Amino acid sequence: MEANVYQLSHFTAMTIFNGPRELMERQGLQTVDFNQYDGVISPVNTSRAHWTFVYLHAITNTIFMFDPLNDTNDMALATEARAKFEDYFEMRRTLYGKADWVDIKWKPGTIQHSMQTDSDSCGVFVMMIAKQVMEDFPNIPVSIPISSSENMMCHHRRTLAKEILQASVSKEEYCSLCGHQDGPQAQDQCIWIQCELCRRWYHVGCLEIEVPAEDQQWFCGLCL
Image (tube, rainbow, N blue to C red; front, side, top):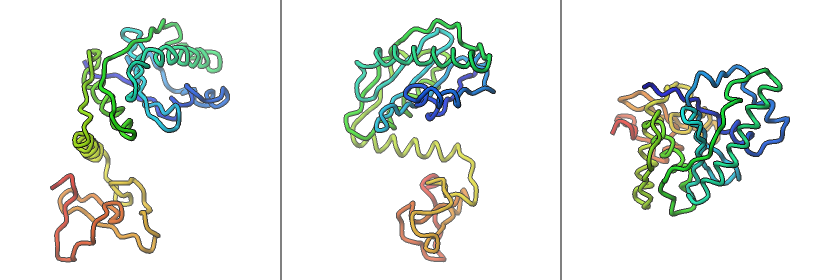
């Protein structure tokens, strides 16, 4: 079965969880019909310093929350998420006449998962959890094991970065690493470099490398 999952923006998700009513109303997604989807996923930065992950599995009417720091907190977070999303869908009906998913009786659920062992890998864990959720969809994963050693965290970061870059559209006016036109240095000092194989462009400053000699071929990390 083809995954039919709506990826909610992290800003909309944060607004649903913590935003004021007037801001949530502006995130009503009037053009979206959730009845066309079987699930919703989104990273959630509820504290502005820590990433969690929300997963609405409409086939079973279950809402899951994942906290990479504390899996014993997942049920409480899922229960809170149920109330937040029920209020959000009801708001859409009141303001815009959108009745999709209003009558679903959501229930909170949990999925066993590994936890981070440092203070800065919550984003990596959220992306790994999202990847596993999407690979298993429409089934619900029984557990999501993630190796959390320092070496494996470096490996996960590198692997995820490559997958994101490989799935992205390369445009000449944007750096394939930072995604911006302007580099980390002043504009008049910004140096660009192009991979000889995939033809992607990068800021030398983003790569933190020395500028290769003019007669030296250079290959990006995706092509090495």
